[in-house]
Length: 408
View 1 (cartoon, rainbow, N blue to C red):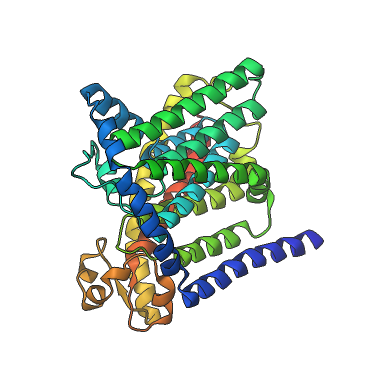
View 2: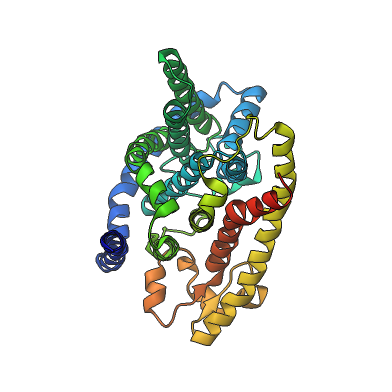
């Protein structure tokens, strides 16, 4: 009972702190004050750094275009979204959990800073911007500082290196030196690639590096506590659902709408789905003694079979979750008398008068929407959140159950 009381106390303190920050920040107009201070400063450095970008881009080669574009795809959010389920199914559950939660944390912090500062990317022209994929085109619509690719690479490669050196049999000074060198080389290449491709200025990359190092240092002090809470804590599902909901409202309003809030919403849902699924099925599918890839308990053909079954299953769940959310959220909102709109998912709600009046607040600014009867909620946020929460839950709960059923 004492442990339950302590858990309830710190959970209440965390949620209460977010609620206090949400209301006080809105009342004091913190976002606009921070933006008025940082935006001119960052914009000056972006403009002043343009000659450096042009000098770097003067060494233009088709090979470098392809190399840096490919490297950016390998460390992008869509890549990690596809890679993390395979990490779960390979038996490395602890690493997969930590990488997922760290990715969600990086995504939230990085995108919050982007939309608070609302600093521009390098002007194109004169800077040549290379967007070889749809994902890169969407990234180009976000604000510049910090570079998310740099920030995420620092955190995830750094944590992966830490995990390998502390949780595996791969040890020794030479291994440490090689591992650190490879991680640093990857970060340097990613940073140089973002500049070469015209996606970021030098100040964006430097900010991504410094913020990433800070997040990584913080995460290495709390990762064991978070993992212990998820697998054996009290009120995990309730707390994480409340936390996810509050984080949606606490997200800052950008100067102009960008895709950043959509990216955060998706990974926020993923984190909730993973936490909920793992907490319910840890002792069945995710404990430390599960079969792992390349061991005698799990061969490569078995892992390939898991991918063949798992990937179509999670895609079906994603589709069904989206369809269910599109049906239930409007019904619940109408029942409660909450005004709603939809920018893309529900055509019948698209283009409403309410939407046109509040286009500037289509993302973020949710506290104002909550307090004002003249604003409409964008149901696309809830649909996207539930869609990805359902997908993540299927990765750690439904799909492993199918693996057991078919003996994979």
